[in-house]
Structures are given as structure tokens and as C-alpha cells.
Amino acid sequence: MTQAPRPEDQAKPATTPSTTPSPAVGSAKVPPTPPDSKAGGTLYGSPASSPPNDAGREGVPKKSPPEKAKRKRRVLPALLIALAALLALTGAGAAAQLTRDLPEATLTTSIDTTQRIPGETPDLPWPADGTAELMIEGLGRLGGSGEGPAEPIGSVAKVMTAYVILQEHPLSGNQEGPSLTVTAADVADYRSRIATNQSLVPVREGTKLTERDALEALMLPSANNVAHQLAIWDAGSESAFVAKMNAAADELGMSDTEYTDPSGFLPTTISTAADQVILGRAAVKNPVFAEIVELEQATIPVAGQISNYNDLLGEAGVFGIKTGSTDEAGGNLLFASRVKVGSRTLILVGAVFNQPGANTPEQLDNVNRVVRKLLTTVRKVVKEYELLAATPAGELETAWGATATVTPADPLKVIGWPGLEVPIKIKDTGSGDAVTAGEVVGTAEASGVRVQLRADATVAEPSLWWRLTRRI
Image (cartoon, rainbow, N blue to C red):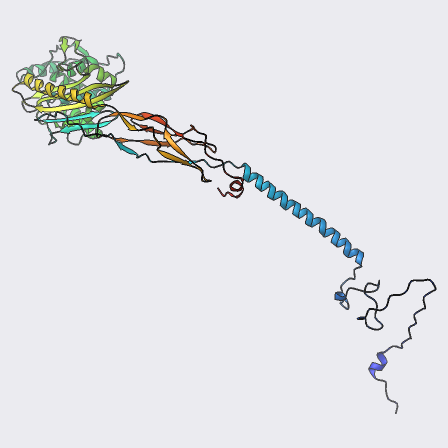
């Protein structure tokens, strides 16, 4: 039985003994086979061989050493280009850091935002009776006395009458304003008031008074009949006009005031010294009003020359505002005075109310006596005081830690009186990124007076390292 050949025997091809030709005479010797080469294998590095890691792997193309060298040569320039780009970017970033604007220095001061003028608060000669109030524009309340409930104020009420008329029918410069024609009813009203001994000016039916004429008659001889005539002319009735007076009082913040007539003759028209000072301050800001109340005399139709009842005009800087007296109200004066301190002129508005007296002249004499004493004392205590000395008052600090002391260039002097609380406003003017000695870095201001704040020394510049590493 013939045995079939085994598969492994069939798969093996016939082998042919390999022969290696002998080298020719004078040719180079063939290097010996490396010790770790398998017998019959090819040498690594020969044209037919592949790197050990790729030996026997299917689908991996075989690369010759020249191709690998080319790949290495391509990678090296790419790395150099990337490194050069990185260095360029780093250099650009550093340059940007070095050229960035520096943050401004911060100003910090030891100056309180409110300073008290040193010394004891002045003791003013307040009246023993009645009430009083003093206020200086731009500075504040100088003081008051006898604070109590609202009381009758007499003809001081006419200040509000004039205020409302000028609000509704403003005048400027030398304007006379529209005309008021005296009616038969106006004449009858005038005659009806004579029996009660009121302050009046004679009128004649058909006569025309300009608005300025009427205001002069109202404020100088304190004509009650003209107060009534102005109310009718403006609002059609006294009650409608009185409503306007009370609305204006509310708008000004006169919370303790009630008007019941335009002249103040009625004792039901009541107020306080403090409220009337509020009104006086508002009224004298109107140039026409201020001009009229400062007149000692004027001339109007029918009545002719009229005189101001305010005997203090021109004395101690007084330029208004209004007297008032009745049996119920006593003697009253709402006044304004110009107080000169150095090169500045201040406006003082005050009120002295409810002064005793058997009659109008006596009441007003007592009022004037009190006002004179007050104004004399005010001129002694209201003067210039040093609020801030020219000594170190703060520090300028930069983001990199450099500092410089800050000092006012001059003493800060204000007008006031001992005990007055004065607000101070500090302003950082922006010092920039380089501060030199003597440079203005801020200001301090109080009561309209301003002084410069200066750096005492040049602020050191930041280091190169701080500039490169800054995050602000």
C-alpha cells in the first residue's frame, strides 16, 4: 500500500545548496556575520533588509537610510521656526508690557471732610423777649433764640406778597411792569381801613400804578390797601392770592407759617423768625426786590413821595427787608445786611420778632436796638480763620509701592466764626504716571476757597521687573 505523502512534506520546496563566490584577488573582504544574526539570514542595513522593529510586519513600507535622514532634516527647520516664533512672541509681549501706560498714583489724605473752626462758639446778645434768628449765606446758621410756636408777624407778611407777585410777574432792570388801574372798589377799601389806623397810601379812582409803583408802596410805607389791590390784580380775590402765598411757603419749606391775608394785619397770619429768614434769603436773591427794599424814598402817583419805615437802612450794611408791628405781633424786623470780611462781602439775613412796646414807634425802637447789638457782635466774630495749615496732610502712592508726601501749597483760610463746622472737599486732580517734586496732585476746597495739594518729592519710577510682571 502506497502511503500518501504528508502535507508538510508536500509544502517544502526543494532546496538548492547556496554557494558563495570566492572573492577576487585584491577585492575588499566581506565583513563577518554579526554574532546575533541567524544563520542563512540577511545582514541589517543591506538593501534587502528592514529595520528590526519593522521586520516581518505586513503593510509597513520599507525605508532606506537616505529617506529617514531627509525626514530628520525636515523636522529640524520646523522646530527652529517654532522656537523663533515663540521667541518673537515673547519679545513682543515684553515690549508691550514695557510700553504700557502706568496706572495713576492714588492720593490719600488725613484731612477730615468736616473741620471745626477752633475756639468757643460766640455768645451773641440775643433779645430777652421774643425770638431771633441769624443766617449767613454760604456759611450757615449763626444762631437763634426764643424758639417757640408761630406768632403774628404783622406787616412782615408783605414780603411774601411781593415775592409771589414777582414770581408771577417778573421784572428786570428798570422795568416798570404792567399797570394796575385803581377802581372804585379800591378807593372804598382804602377808606374802610382808615378808621383802624392801618398803614395806607391814598389812591384815586382811574389812577394807574405800575407794578413797580405798587411794590414800592407795599414795601416802603407798608400800604395795606395796596397789598389788597395787588392780590385782586393777580388772583382775582384775596382768598385765591392767600392760597398762592401758602403754596409758596410750603415750597420754600416754611413749615411753621400760615398766611390768612396779604398784608399781615390779621393776627391769624402767623410765622416764626426761622421761617421768615428762609423767605428773606429767597427774596433778596431777586435783584428788583433787593433794589426796592433798599430805597429810603420813592415817588408814586397820588401819594407823591413815600418813605421807608426801616430806620436801619444804610447802618451796619443793612439794605432791607421789612418792618412790621401790631398790638398782637409787637415789633418785628426781617433784615438783610452786607458783611464785608477782607475782599469778600457776605449776605446776612436775620429776624427779630415780637419785641415789646406800648406803640409802633416804641416797638420798632426796641427791635432796632437788638439788631444793632447783634450786627456789632457779628462783625467782631465773623472773620478769616485758618482751617488747614501748610503742613504734610497726605500721601501719594503708586501701584509699584513708591510714595511721596503731600502738603497744601498754602494754608486754607475760610471766613466763619469759632465753632462753625466747615465741609472740606478733597479732589484728586490725576497725577499721571510720573510725579515730580512740587507737582499739583489735588486740591482742598472749603467755603469757596481752594488750595493746591503738591507732592513734596519726585516719585520713583517702577523697576524693569515690575513692568514685565505687572498685571494691572
